[in-house]
Each structure stands twice: as structure tokens, then as C-alpha cells.
Image (cartoon, rainbow, N blue to C red; front, side, top):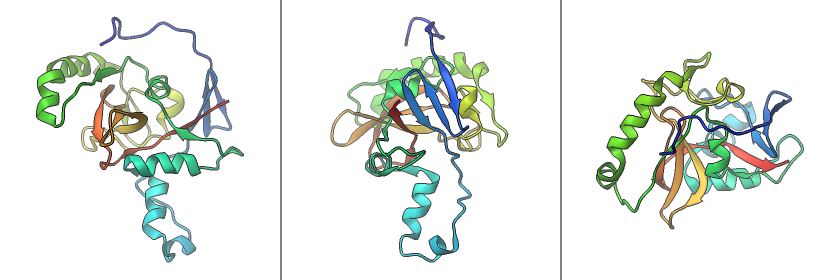
Amino acid sequence: MKSSLFSMCIVSISIFANDVVIINDTMYQNQSFSKKVELTEKEKFGPNFLDTIVKKSRNMNWELAKGYCEDLEYKGFSDWKLSTHQELEKISRVDIYYGLGDYENFDDYAKQHLENAKAHVALIKPHRHKSKIGSELTVKEEFLEEMPLINDRHMMGEFWASDERDQNYAMTLDFRNAVAWWTTKDRKAYVLCTRQK
């Protein structure tokens, strides 16, 4: 864990058309996540129905997440990419606990990191804030209202980072608990794309 809960740094944040946020020189996709996916009539009955739902909800495995960002054409730009952990870290209100190691399963992770991670989660809990739909997250205000529903009842708050440990594991950041760890690439997590301004 870092030496202080809140890092002191000069950060320039601007909102561009409400659905893009710029932090320093990084532009963040800020489209709404939704489990209630709105489909057009063509999409409802089209051959790519399931693909469309996955892309609109942006909850997918790591390979699909990477491809989604690389294929994204949004706000006149086509050079989007899957966020690095450093880029995702900038949207958090608190420091991230990095529970990284050489573990292959949750038991190994627990042996190395669980006690420290629990202490970190208890420390950051008062710094979560709640969105209109009831998400309880540690993200900056500019991102809060577009985030998916993540709270005590809907626990999964993980977002993919582009960082890979090996062919099976990539990093996720959890914006409910401000914790990052290695996750198997075949699991589902949320996707937030970035590009350099």
C-alpha cells in the first residue's frame, strides 16, 4: 500500500460534452454503463444480438474488452485503447491497494494479501460516495453517475486494465473497494476506454 491514502499531485480535470472526461492528457470514455440495455428493433432481431448486449453493457472478458476499445469510434476518435492501471487509478478518489503476486487462485491470494486488503477497504469505506442509481464507489464525481450499479447487493465493481501478468491473467481495479489484483482473463469485468489527447 502507498504511504498515504490520498496522493498529493496537481491534476487538471475537464469535462467535454459530459460524456468524455479529460485528466491531464488522457481522455476517458464516460458513456453510461447499464444492465438495462436499450436495443433498437434491428438489434433485437439481428444476428449479433448477444454481441450487441455485451458491447452496450461493457461487461466482458479481457480479450473482448481489449478488442472493444480498439474498435471503438466515439466522439470523432478511433484511437481508443483499454486503460492502463495508471489511467484507471487517476479516476479514483483514494489510493488503490495493489494485491499483486504470483498467486494462481484465491487461496494463494488470501495468504499473501487478504489481511492488508481488508484493512485498506475499512480505511477507504468512508470515502465512497453514492450515485443516483445507488452505486457506492470511490471514483471522482465526474465519473460517478455513468458507472454501473455496484453496492452491497451488487458487489462486482471490477474494471479491466490492459496490464497482463501472463497469457491467463490481467489486472482489474475494483472501484468499490479501491483494490487491484490479477484476474483470469476469461472472467467478466467492466470496460472503460482511454486515448491520449
